[in-house]
Amino acid sequence: MATKELIGKIIIQENIDSVDINKLPNTFVINVPDPYKNYYGRFTEIVKPVSIIFVTKTPNSFEKILRVTKKINEKYNLKLDGAKCEVTIKSRKLDGIRVKGINAYPEIAQIQQYYKDEGYDFAKSEKFATTEALIRINRFFNIEELDKGVYHSKDEDSTYYIEVPRYMGWDEFKKLTYEVKHNVSDSNYDIAKGIFYVNHGITEILRIVKPKATLELLKTIQKKYIERLH
Image 1 (cartoon, rainbow, N blue to C red):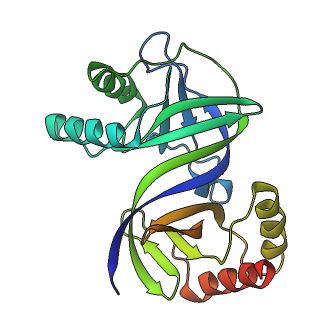
Image 2 (cartoon, rainbow, N blue to C red):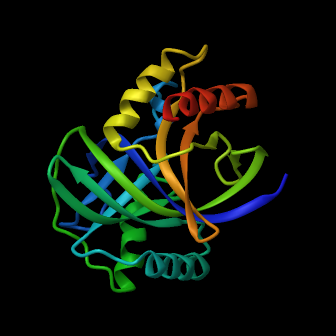
């Protein structure tokens, strides 16, 4: 099947917490947990951070983040994945850079310094325990089509995407997700909603995280949403 590189957006709801050590002094850093750990061992100690957000004082363009991240990767022989993101906590909106590919928590401060050297201005430090947040991430997708409207990420082995016929607001998405999860044989997966920018338009998608998900399960989930969205 064909491989595609697309730009798009993912919206996830996660319980985040602040990073309080291993960062530049008086800067605001957020830890986003591994989505599998909702189902696959939250009590397993993982040393490697999965997704870190550097909160910035002002919004930054997706283009600038991509360009700067590429420059940092080439200069320091790293494999960082930088993306533009917005974090909503209750009524607050925070702008930031979502960074994947940091190998250990003690490396966070050095990675921050690389971005700071490129002109990024970080927000002042805040500290909080586990807090629910809505996170919007603009990013690249490198995908392979498994079947019509069903895709597998080429970069994240346990991540899949399915097309759905129309836009869902967050409340509708949560309601339908509850219904679908109670109508499939295996509900142990993490799901988020998003879009691909394709052919000068928007394709609505759902992101599914599940190790070794079968095509049958993915198509069943897709069918259940389509039935409810028509």
